[in-house]
Image (cartoon, rainbow, N blue to C red; front, side):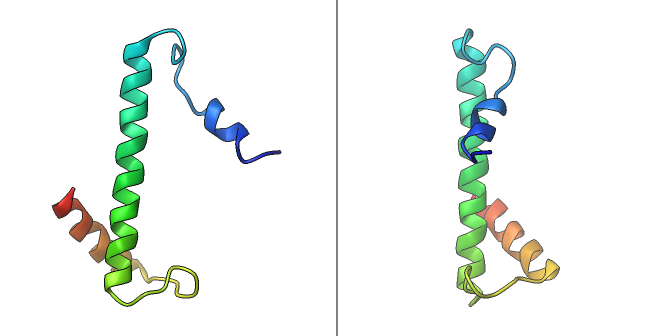
Length: 71
């Protein structure tokens, strides 16, 4: 199974027929990606490498709080 199959299956009903549903869904996806990128940046500022370090639950919560303030 390809990782790309999950993207098109994750769309709400009416995604291709109704431009309003498509725009709302796309905006939500972009916001989620932007927030997770901010969390990654905050974890990087805390000195964690995203390829080698596994953050603790407290570090994740701290990074998410900081990202929410910027979001």
